[in-house]
Image 1: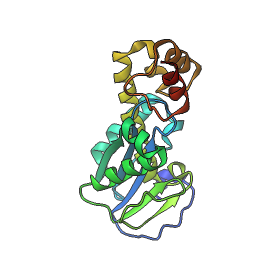
Image 2: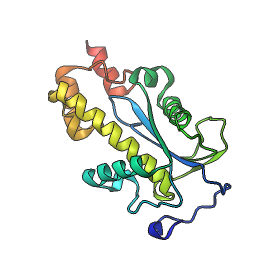
Image 3: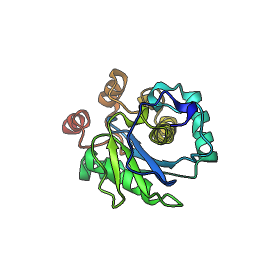
Image 4: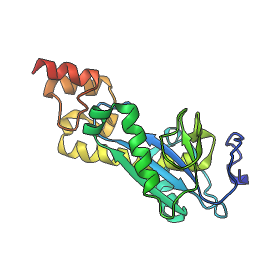
Length: 205
């Protein structure tokens, strides 16, 4: 690790080249919207200070880092799997589909993957899964930031179209506010039909 990111836990990586991509996703748990994944190849000669798991960063700091990553990374890509794909494939397989799409969109391409979680997404590239990877390697942290900022923006956009659901506040998670709105107004086309709270409301229609 670089000196500016000493807080990242030591991680043994079976790759020493330049084209290592961190991969992470956001949006497994929400009842609505896409699952979003990002892949980032950071420049080892130009470390970005302040990278961390996106969940521990306040929104303005995430957004500032998002801009910095996009400006300074060797490559980055953001991709998604739609609510329809989540319903057709299940959230596990849809998450891996979004990850593979992000990896494939990298230009230049990655040679090795570090993927947050306990499973690789089934891509042809070699790599390793890293539990709590967004707090253990700066490239995965960078990917988590890009994915989080992108998905939050989608929820804010959905909120402008359907303010009665409160998406800008809860980002689609099953909070009491969201569940109450779902009961009062019914599911939107963007809701995931395979998720139990949405299924229950659809059964009442």
